[in-house]
Image (cartoon, rainbow, N blue to C red; front, side):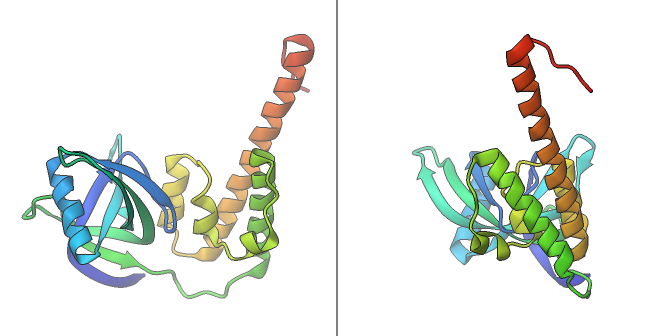
Length: 208
């Protein structure tokens, strides 16, 4: 579902996937992207991070805004933090600017009734994962304000999983997906703990 179109929208093809609300560190060193960043900063504009996979450039990416410049170098290189804002789809590539750009469609979710049960299940699985992975017990207020994107943005999922989240136009569907991903990550952590415990006791990991 479309939330509008933009022409001449800057695009940054990378071997990563960004999500709305995710903070992404970037090192800008190519001249065309130095120009792109300068243009975005001058007008407080967005640019799109799009996954450049082995099989080509995906058409759905994430619009981002420059959150903070961390460091500027004498040769013009920049270290910065970008924050994901909203999903976009490339409608057409444009090659008349000094950097990659295109006509993009800002993607909105389909109208649906939010399901509280799905939100609560996702937040509970996320809280369990945070406790298991970090030994930090998150406060209830930390969790209840998070949607699917915000929770997933803090977990190092694979690129395919993150791209799958971007492609979904339903928050209920995203909540179901992140719940499965969180539970799968918990199982992997449990397996690592079990393997380490058994390895310490007898040098081997046995199954069953």
